[in-house]
Amino acid sequence: MDLRFTADEIAFRDAARRFFRTAVPEAIRRKNLAGEHLDKADIVTSQRILNARGWAVPHWPRAWGGQDWSPVQLYLYQDEMQQAGVPAPLSFNTTMVGPVIAAFGSDEQKRKFLPRIANLDDWWCQGFSEPGAGSDLAGLRTRAVRDGETWVVNGQKTWTTLAQYADWIFLLVRTDPVVKKQQGISFILVDMTTPGVSVRPIITIDGAHEVNEVFFDDVVVPAGNLVGEVNKGWDYAKFLLGNERTGIARAGESKARLKRIRELAALEFAGARPLLEDPIFARRLAAVEIELKALELTQLRVVADERKYGDGKANPASSILKLKGSELQQACTELLMEVAGPWVLPRRPEGERRNEPHGGPDFADQAAPAYFNMRKVSIYAGSNEIQRNIIAKAILGF
Ligand SMILES: Cc1cc2nc3c(=O)[nH]c(=O)nc-3n(C[C@H](O)[C@H](O)[C@H](O)COP(=O)(O)OP(=O)(O)OC[C@H]3O[C@@H](n4cnc5c(N)ncnc54)[C@H](O)[C@@H]3O)c2cc1C
Image (cartoon, rainbow, N blue to C red):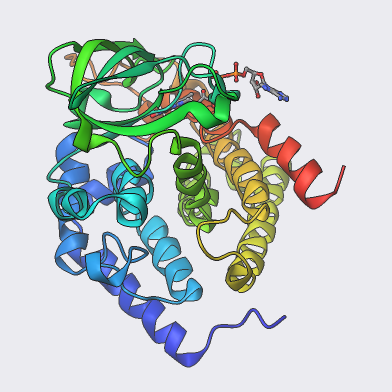
């Protein structure tokens, strides 16, 4: 297998590198690379810059703004975007609900939603998980009952990321409680301003407001908001989850973070010498760098394999990318904690201002929140235990 890039691919990579590093404001990219929370405005600004160039949704069908890029181009686009610190286009919009509407939605839904999804005119959130239905998602209980030309939705979703910003939510709802559980689920679009929708924050261990509970109390939804066919929602959900391929490893982001850790470790002292020269730290850093190189090669093998897995079918190797990629994201935050040392302790809660200086280096302020926040990556998008089950079954044949 030849994993080298062609001259055209290298030219494409260089153009992407230039664009990401010049068009998207440095302040947003720096914040993102430092692992700080981005504001809604940061994400909207960045996505609209990409969309103006036709680069917010390159993987979509051409008719709706896609670019017809090869798997290698898509890989390079994501890798360069992550290394430059450009926030990825909002995944709920661009890799989740957008492709589902483009593939299964009515013409009216496509015209109404897709351009606004690409430009982040509407912010979408994902209403799949419920208390008691996470890994066992098909056990979900939020119900939609047909009433004339509407559906009436009752129930609760949880862990809904950034629902506080959302204009719309896409939901999996139970529309047939009698049949096998996967066969009684539908996919429906709900305007967050509809009476009966309420959002309650969940504050995570880093002190941030990133996830929420969302409640549905007799929420009346027009019948035209149901996507595709009634009771086929499980198929659409599988299609949606299969859409996230190599980007899920976030290797570009980890590369940029490791580069920064190396630079910072050269400036911080451990005793009489820079931390970077401490043999124990240097060995740990090298181990993570080697694992990351291996992950990149696995990513390239998945890209080379891409043609085998068309039509939204998930390549089981993406479970390896999720598993290793999330472990390395976490390893980067652990290394940064070591570089910051005791300066991680006096950190101020986000937004709090004080007269006294912090005392430590600026980067130390974000080290602990980023470390705590990254615990999430081995839970969401299918926990790492579930990924191991998939690898055992689909790759190792157990
Ligand atoms: C920060 C964050 C953001 C999220 N954002 C969203 C969102 O926007 N929208 C949304 O719908 N959901 C979201 N989720 C939910 C996420 O998809 C679920 O948390 C995840 O699927 C796990 O489900 P659970 O939390 O119910 O845990 P459970 O499924 O109850 O699992 C508990 C533990 O048991 C393990 N486990 C479960 N089943 C098995 C098994 N068969 N074999 C081995 N081990 C198993 C799990 O790995 C885990 O360690 C988010 C979660 C987090 C943490």
